Length: 183
Image (cartoon, rainbow, N blue to C red; front, side):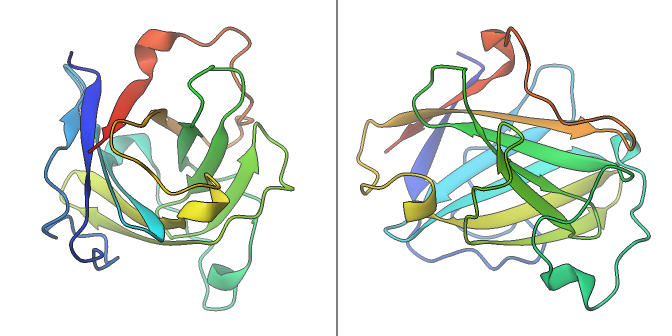
């Protein structure tokens, strides 16, 4: 259906520059009536994610300076940010959360618990009316075993406004999640 995308094995990793022009980005899903899109690729070491969201849903984060961009789990409570939730077992009960502001400040957690400390790299870019987020997450920090053809996960990308707590849904709506099938 319209909420299903295919993740293909990447012949080469994408260049994380906030520009979705790499060969591995080829199956982006655009939600009906929205300007959001999401794409996934992978190799033996990383899962690559590309998210395009409407720029009007993310106010500019002016908190960036050279030293902050390397700090893990920054306090993003007072900035707009993109949140990507990854549910590898598709139970809609627990999900890994990667959050990033348009300035590239990050926070990661599992359902709000910041003890999950994945290795991930990200770049963002405002491009016209959109904000582009490209990320590479170390595969073994998401799933222990290599990704196999036919495996599937749920993903959900959304925007969180400044001042709003990023809490998990009490009763998740499965129609909001995107099914990613690995090929």
